[in-house]
Image (cartoon, rainbow, N blue to C red):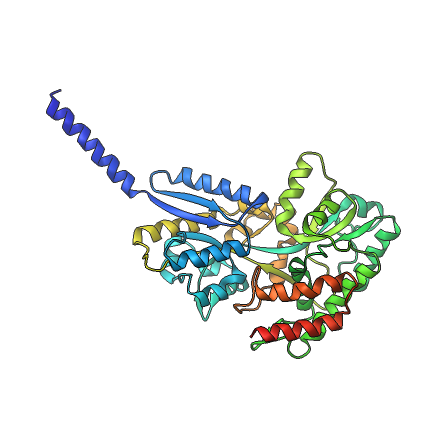
Length: 424
């Protein structure tokens, strides 16, 4: 083999390698996922990268949940330094649209992802839509549920033949179940995050929804009889505290600890704590447990939910190439189609073909509570709503003293109504 041929062959290989390298698209990804769901998302990313080697690679960074994440996205998008793709709460979409930091998801994008809007629950899809335009693709819904200790409730004779807690059908019946647990010597019949009004918003808003109530009507907060419905919700929860049926001034970690230690027989918390329970049980460190839809305290089953979704930032002065957008959409489509694994984080996948699959229907406890998607309510569509938003902050100020017996529910509601409407 002469030197010229050898040089030509090497040069040819170099050109092919350079072409191959150029063909691979890197998708810069930001999320706010930690704990059990963060671990599972990292596994999904690793699987995607392995399956798309040489074509698309996800370069992922996890940032701090809540205000720090959203502030960084806003400032980064303004100078063209936001990621190519990010996780985003559906509840934050109206504010993001007002800020101009999200790109619209178009019909062509749906086709490129290999997905269809008809694959999604209308309420979930509506949660990421503003003025008829869609700005994100839902990945899940993550409602709150009722966790319960099957061993404790069983010993107290408070389980149905189906292994569910008794008393889920009314306020009177459920309160009777809590009282029976207290009478049986259970220290905390219910563990509740009563020291964090931001978290308790989820429970209280659910109970408003069970009365057909809504937080905002035609731009006005607590219009008509909605103030009364909020007061009803607060009164029930405050009554449980006064009767010693739920924990007082308990923060989030302490609430989880009360339940997992067996001191609290039940707990209202997000589905994202399912991995905690699964992991402890697999290590032989947890009792038999279950998770079900919230009890119907008022007229109808209703549960507050939010949605982790995928959004594409609108980077100022930095237009996304067609090749980059194709890579981003490939990531989103793949994640949807492989979201059965995401369900092990407790979340309910938003992609219908997954939740309708036999594998998902056999998954516990997810399959037990997934029917609640028919009864979900989302945040009102306003830039004031959403995770760590002004609505949460205002209501949190009054929820904590009210739930802990230091403020009258009627007084709290009046103050909330005034402060919320002052925000407009």
